[in-house]
Length: 92
Image 1 (cartoon, helix red, strand yellow):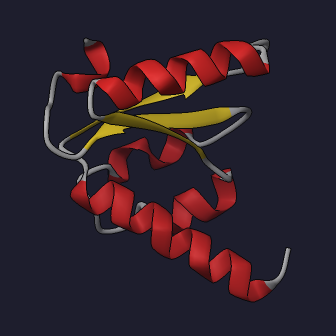
Image 2 (tube, rainbow, N blue to C red):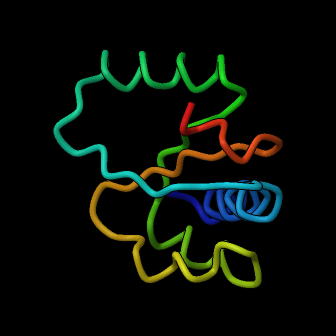
């Protein structure tokens, strides 16, 4: 992966970690593409999102944000489910 791509991803992840009002790390290992697509559609309807993260870049991006304590949990197959306006959105 090129450096410019990495920088773009770090910026994108940092914006998520800075603006989200709620977020949950999930392990998507073993999920099918169909399962993840259906989950994303359902989350979108609830004004929430799911973003697969690259762990090494997410560890950099989370620094200085409210989600900084999650930094130690970026390992294996992780994604973040988050909402930027409804704290209960992902749970709905």
